[in-house]
Image (cartoon, rainbow, N blue to C red; front, side):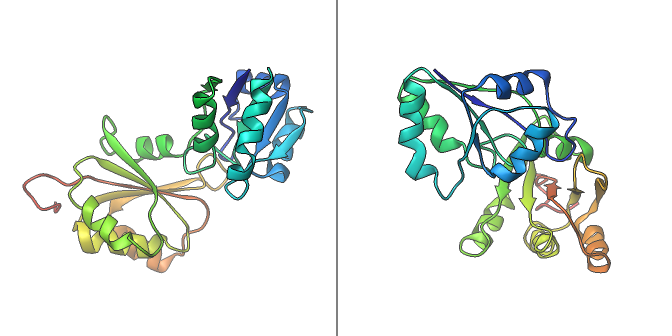
Length: 228
């Protein structure tokens, strides 16, 4: 009995490991955030394992049933639409419940957007903090104000529709910082822009951002109030 947490490509279907493909083929069942998207991946690699949906809207309802299924000696592989389950995606709840029930949880290494983004940024990556998606409304301003004191490099996921506003808020509360914006990582139109907050704000005022966005921001330089 085991739950495998299997990373899937964030764009390029070639970014699957041999072991990930094997596990998806050998598992008794696949738990997918969106079965339609995962079906594309399964077809590409000739995987015919039965699949059911497991997403943020049904995970609380289904988690106990899945744990009982695994406890009977079965194996399941959990995948999200892209990247590593549990990182801004469903997975945390099921993994925790399995551990409580004595079921082995094994996460395979693989694709996630935050690591390529911070390496592409040229900013310090020996220590960093990953904030995922900031609150859209309630608590957003307070969170950004708190992060103004963070000295480590910060990584954020953001919608293209909120990217410009997000950068403007960072400039307001962080002061001038170095920043990197990556979009469509591993896809045909992959692009990383590096510069200061003011430079990238001006860029995106002229050219609307598109695609999946990762923002990497320089941490506060202690003693200089975050300004360079």
